[in-house]
Amino acid sequence: MSDAFLVLNVKGKETVRDFLKNLSAQCDEICVAAAFFCKDRLLGDWTARGCKLRVVVALSYPTDPKVLRDLLALSPRQVSVGFYEKQFHSKLYLFLKEGRLIGGVVGSSNFTGGGLERNIETNILIKDGEELQTLFDHFEV
Image (cartoon, rainbow, N blue to C red; front, side, top):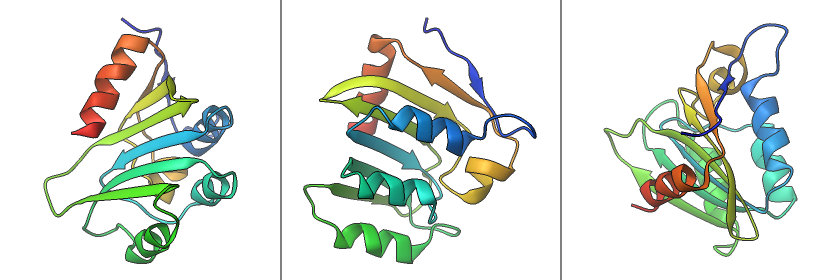
């Protein structure tokens, strides 16, 4: 079992966005599987740094089509985007450095303002290599 702890959006504490930003600072590749996906400054930070992004989202409201178009306009070497039309509810964030998994967050936070900052969310940080690989394999399906 991993040494996991909760990441929540609770007043006076670090937000999920802050936590993901801090974790991603060490990375050169980020995988996001989130049912709902909207514009967020994290995305701008990641693309500006040249991080490779793998994104899987549901094509339903409140996912922002403009954000998806902007991602698809980037180089396929930097960004890959996959879509589900319905029945997709995952919230999974994986962080890699030089091809090695260094952390993952699994929980209730969509990639939206609410999920990253305003809603009370429950997420667990995973650092165990075997568990991370299992999550990464799930992401690749």
